[in-house]
Amino acid sequence: MNEIYTSIPLGSGSTHAHTSTWVASTLRQEIAQGRLLPGSKLSEQALADALGVSRNTLREGFTLLDSELIITRIPNRGVFVSSPGAADIREIYAVRRTIEPAALAWGPALDVPALAQAIVEARAAAKAQDVPGMADANQRFHESVVRATGSVHLLELMGRILAKMRLVFHSMSDAPDFHSHYVERNAALVALLASGQRNEAAQTLLGYLDTAEAELLDHYESSQKI
Amino acid sequence: MNEIYTSIPLGSGSTHAHTSTWVASTLRQEIAQGRLLPGSKLSEQALADALGVSRNTLREGFTLLDSELIITRIPNRGVFVSSPGAADIREIYAVRRTIEPAALAWGPALDVPALAQAIVEARAAAKAQDVPGMADANQRFHESVVRATGSVHLLELMGRILAKMRLVFHSMSDAPDFHSHYVERNAALVALLASGQRNEAAQTLLGYLDTAEAELLDHYESSQKI
DNA sequence: AAAATAGAGATTGTTCAACAATCTTTTGAC
DNA sequence: GTCAAAAGATTGTTGAACAATCTCTATTTT
Image (tube, rainbow over all chains, first blue to last red; front, top):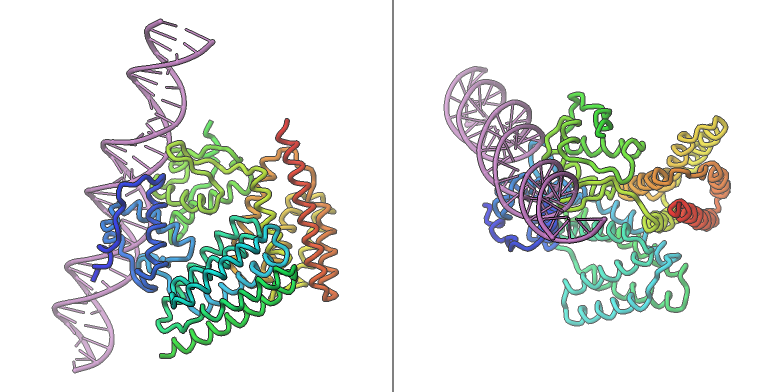
């Protein structure tokens, strides 16, 4: 029942300023990669043993992941991998709708070549039918967008948002290929930006995000009814 | 030397699901109110005793505050109240410049009456020479702006940003009265919004934030040279 | 047989005590 | 006065313990 824990690679004595930080990033990765699925319970003793740390240190890591909303802590019940719902999808898009168009419209550090590069990589992944590769390239694209704000805080927030996004996909077992038809949308944005039409690009992205949210919510609702 | 610790009100046996959460919010409040100044060292044993919790629980709270960048942890050296510098000021305004104009321009939950109310309160506080009251009203104004995005994540981020802002003010001992002449700027924004000119309001706020950042950086530089 | 109840067992929340690793201060030599 | 070494203090982490709470099972009740 708990075999999954044993598959987590143990810390190979590498240097890490704070073990709790290492624990958190290890679990974060496990969850992002879908090896720990939404809803899974994370038993303290079992996980502590598997990771080779004490329960106290593990709990410090849990505190971090809890603040990132990657896990859900229910007092006296335990820790669970968050399983995002419709409200979370709406929240994700409320954040993206605020930040990303603003970054395109007036972000001081807009790097159009970097965006173009992400599109090239996304197209290559699409051609090779490499779905994870497409997801990665798409993520890099949107990270580059947020980087235009010049804020590490926003970049970090975006990282958390995209992590939660992956949880949404993991909890929808039969997600269709959303990524592939976003590639050309992103390309259209880059074309607008290349010709200096930043406001138009922002407006267009706003529209894209609205339809993407609607599509995701629609698919989520129907996947819940099953 | 450590008398300040004894002035922290102890937890009066109130119910709090997680003590570490209570510890974090207690310290957060102490810092925001300027009772623990930037640069102060927070000794684990002394603080744990003062708060009436164990060192382990206190450290869980530290983990939280560290992720919020309110404290700075130096391995094997200790925990210090963050003392923000010019880079932090720039970061704060990079975030605000992204989020706040976007909220005004296309935030779906814009509440103009709430903004107007914050202005009324700010003017009352200004008339009464109540500087903390003005700071509070100003904070409520900008929180209402961010609330227009409909995102609790962004609201929380804004809360952290404004907390760090207070640290900036606390570290500049002789800060002139920045708040008072922002009140009328905010009022101008509300006037634009009331007449439906959301894009103009966003553009205007963008300009305000630029000048505010420049003013703050300017004052910070000169206060450092002393 | 189904539902309610009680109790045993397991898990979480928190504390305490200990120890290695690292930093800081003191001491002592030059 | 400067530098190095030892003593002392603080942090990082662990392990064990115990109360509070939840979960599951077995028993009783209807």
